[in-house]
Length: 237
Image 1 (spheres, rainbow, N blue to C red):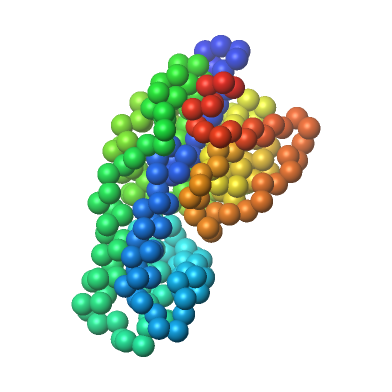
Image 2 (image 1 turned 120 degrees about the horizontal axis):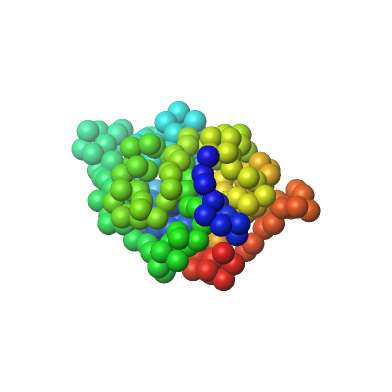
């Protein structure tokens, strides 16, 4: 159980990718490079992207999230659309689009370190991210932000059940626990369904597979905040 230093302290479950640090912009750049490389003669760029979106949905079921899954998606998409067979040389080239993401240095959203420094002494902060365990753990370590958090949780999917498990694991009080994130599908809607409060911080480049309408707040006892930027948390907590 997490001890509370004062009666006003809250628990903030905070998303990592595109909430604390940039993530999807690198995938979008890689996808743009891939589509240019494919240079399809019969399908527009938008049509190629629709095929890739579907392939990614299928890859997630097979491989989960992360760069390995993304690389498989690019190869599968190429195989479906290209008239050329995927030679070893082409295979290496396609995988290189995912490699460029892995090599990119971490980039925080504006004022993230300062905001966490403000929040950490006042509240209990837990990173709650989904994806590949090794990749996400590596990001957390490289970020240098771990010291602001009392715990980290990396889950395969952010479902209502996953949030309920975290509530039980840390014996959290749902009436004083909030999920902070940019994704309606993973951060906001399932957290509300699990009985938590939520803080929606939209990102202009949220992954298309995370797009979803924000659900109505299920209970009058729950709250939903919509903020323009992460640093606005200082005005509410």
